[in-house]
Image (cartoon, rainbow, N blue to C red):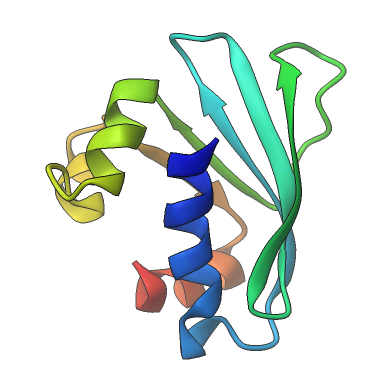
Length: 105
């Protein structure tokens, strides 16, 4: 949870994220869990862990990765661009959000 808060906190604090208010989720495939929360007002709020399944609400911005890749992103051993390009990290969002997120990532 700390690793995810660190990554998302940096993203939320970026000036390009100003005015962005979206639900988000990060599915950790090896733990079969989804962390859901809200990105807005320069912060990430209301993070909570849910078991992966049909009861998980569909977020506006969705990340999928393993917990090892999450930790590697946090400590700088893995960079988002190459991880996304090779499929280690998946990002799903609407076209508008994707265009805005590319400035942040």
